[in-house]
Image (cartoon, rainbow, N blue to C red; front, top):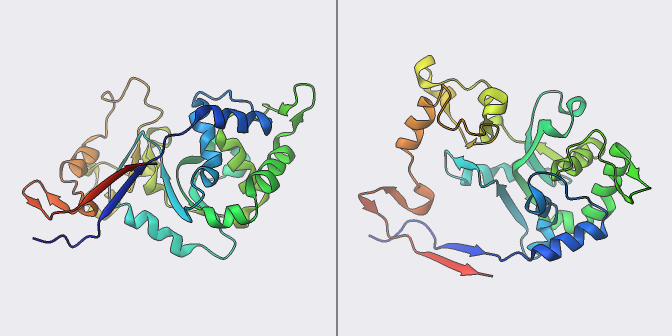
Length: 246
């Protein structure tokens, strides 16, 4: 049977960590967050992928619960000035950088390159929000965690028109008690059980030691990788997958 899906291209880019470190040093960004240089690399994605116009980013500690095509469709909600879309908690402006999440987001890289957002927008915004430590010649660490989210938060705070918000169903995490999504055992309304992605952060060593996993297990048990052309283990639609290293 011929595949009903187009050929899937999977490209892996080998990242030069020294290059990222040099970029951070040149822009006076201290690498102090636990995510390290990998976390900071998010800020440079439009430079790392110069020929990519639009992209979705998903942290490696997340599991998609549905076809990522539905996440990509969020680009249809972008206005002329919109560059990013991510999840934000209630009152995020007052609560700080930890109440937005750069774990899963949409990025119109073509727009961001046109305005040179990193140097011309994001870092001036961070300086306004957090200040600059003239003595150490680095962005101040006061009132922030030291991660990439600080800079994204600052830009969102100063330039709100550049941002959209995606539904919390794309970032269901234990930190925020799965944003109120209840397990199948606690509700008969299956429409409230949709999750775009579940985030395995804030669990530390308790990945198998908390209640409420039954709804996740039931979804993953019947999870179908339709976007790969595999509706189930007995029905291979012949999807061609091409993997490249760039």
